[in-house]
Length: 151
Image 1 (cartoon, one colour):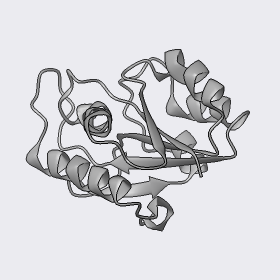
Image 2: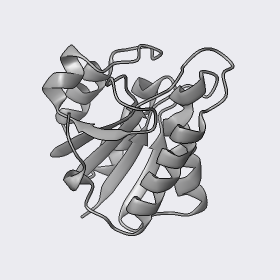
Image 3: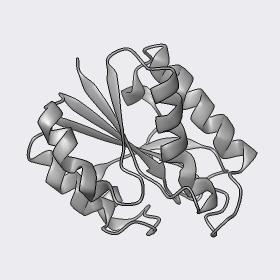
C-alpha cells in the first residue's frame, strides 16, 4: 500500500514544529511504503504534489490541542477536525485541506500530537521531541497507524 506522510507545522512556534521535525526524520531515515511531504505552515501549497502521487492513503501529522499531556498522540476523526482540535497557525483550516485531499485520496488519517506550547520562538518540548521520535520509529518499523488510540 502506498502512502504519504503529509506533515504540517510552523518551525518557529515551539511544538507546532512536530510535523516538520517528523518530515526531517523521514527524509533522513525513510519508512518503507511511505513518502514524506512537508507542508510546513502552508500545506495548501503542497496538495498538488499529494494528488500527483496518487497515494492510497495520507497520514496528516500536526500539533493538535486535545487536552492531553504534552506529546500524547491520537488519531482524530475528520468530523472532529472540522469542529475541534485545530491549532490555527496555518493559512487555511486543516478541515479544508482534508476535504480537498478527499477528492483524490481514498484514505486520510489525521494524527495529532499534543503540544505543550506553540508560542513564537519557544523551543520544542522534550515530550514532543520524544513523540516525534516514537512516531518515526513506528512508521519505519511498519506499525499499523490505524491502531493508534482515537479522541
